[in-house]
Amino acid sequence: MSSSSLTPTQTLLRALVKRIDDSKMSANHLPETAEFLDGRRQHVIWYDELLHRVDYAINDDILRISAVGEIGRLIAQVIDYIKALCEGTTDCIPFTLAAWLKYELGSLTHSALGVALVPFPNLNYFYQDIGKTVQSAFGDLDRFINGNIRTQLGQNDLVDPPALPSDLILIGFQYAMSNDILFNSILFHELGHHVYIDSKIREKYMPQITIDITARFTAQVPDFATLPPIHKTQLIRDFSNVVERWLNELFSDVFAVAIIGPQFCFSAHDMAFQKARSTAFSLTHPAPALRQVEQWKTLEDIGWVNPPEAFIAPNSTFRVEASTHFSQLRGTSPTVWSLDPRWNNPLHTACASIAIDEFLRRSPQIRVDAQNAVPDRVDRCKEFWRLGPAIVNTLNQGIVPSTIVTSGVVDDIPLSRLAPPNCFQYNPRPTTVVNSARYIYQDGCKEIKKLWGGSSANQLTRDQITKVHLRLSEWTQKAVSDWLLINGVS
Image 1 (tube, one colour):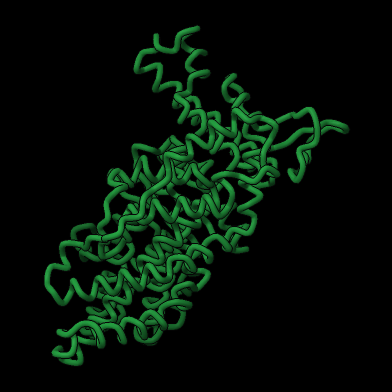
Image 2: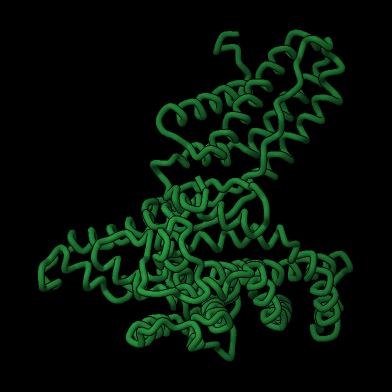
């Protein structure tokens, strides 16, 4: 078939195959992403061949049009996701962070789920279970074809479609931060969304939310009684979903804090919470001021704030200075919350106020649920307070802290599997390394700057300061990469 005789749907299918091929020729993808793209390429080619056969073998015009329409509808659903995956090549993403995210997800959910990082040019982060999304779309289309099209073709005219894709989640992040593992720590929030869904937290809370919202709207909102039944049902559904979305966001925040401690709070404040004092609840997110308060409470719950004496290495200066840095994360809970401007009529204002109250009543429990999703959260905190001083000292000398040697046993911290006999050698976990690096960053990288500028760090140019920050991130990333390698994560 010449290119001039192709239908728009066939042209789109072939353009998608070419997009996948071009991305694979120009750079490499992480294994799970490459496998996913290869499978979708085979599926798209199969649909293209199907349309070619339909044109010549089926005389039913309505059935032919239906086949073209269904395939076109599928491609419209998934093309943006597939194009996004094509952009997630290893030269555009912090692939060490991708491996770390995958490791944490697998160890906490006991799954072999792949994680695809995709850079975007905007200032947003997002999560999408692309495996389930594409499985659903392709599965529906395959069932349509098997039930309506294949019966019209000869049994030998068309092979079975390729297998549906394996599980894969897509996490989008800022393109500008592609090489920075420290600031991209905010991506653990996106991982939290998957754990929230996987743990069926929505199913745990949603029925009672709907019951409570219904009762309170009926009893406390006078205008609610005047609405037609269909509008009442819609209003209850809308605001119940709003409360659940807020719980999802709070769960993901707390989960990220439980995974990587203060470093998440710092990176979230740097990258997403420029208006951290905002008291406004939106349709999709709780107020930033409240999120900051809840993150601080989580740090307190785990031991990052005022750690128990049993956590502390014999270095009082480190404890004082680290606590000073962490204190910047403390928020203040307002007594009055403001509303999204789209809730601009008396009915919606009254309903939104009740929704906020229902969310606040459930916040303490959702914080417990999120922390429980990370069983070793206290051990992560304890290791930082025990090994942090040694890691900071190592990084300040320009040395990657993949291995830390101490003068004696550090209680409750497992020795390195590679340690020689009678040697107290440790491989600090990524959470400890990134928080130690953040300690240095918050301290102004004073000692590292001296490596570039001699005795006076004030002599550094802006370009040199940028290189200092980049080197700190690179050393951190290398230490994380080494830890993953030592622990059998490729």
